[in-house]
Image (cartoon, rainbow, N blue to C red):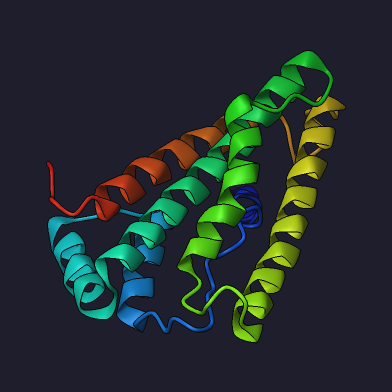
Length: 190
């Protein structure tokens, strides 16, 4: 139980959350997203339809597009950290997938597109700087995991990272990515 809780915390610690203070996302929207991304989360047609009803009432089409693109990339980012950890563990040195490198460049750009203030405003600058700080922390945490994986700690003595935990994290991240993709696709598909 503790290992699963630790794994869950490790998974969510690596993605800077889309917390644009200027856009007040309805709590119901956040709740549906969190239920979808939970370790044992799910997405149903009813959740999907409610999510899109709220989304369409709360944001413009452009905001929805930027929001969805950011959230999809953020989920991929989490997955790619663990795929890179797997490669680092196998190779005994830090290895980053090309996709991880690209996502580390793209996520800040995607986030900036969600900021509803004019580019030269103090509010825009504040939002961007706050995100940059959080994203830098996220990258540092990810680098720490890759270093830890590359050093291949003794699997029997280390509860933080081992081959089994990396495989579980990848499986959870893949499941979460598919649920989020289903949620963020406007037309429901079984």
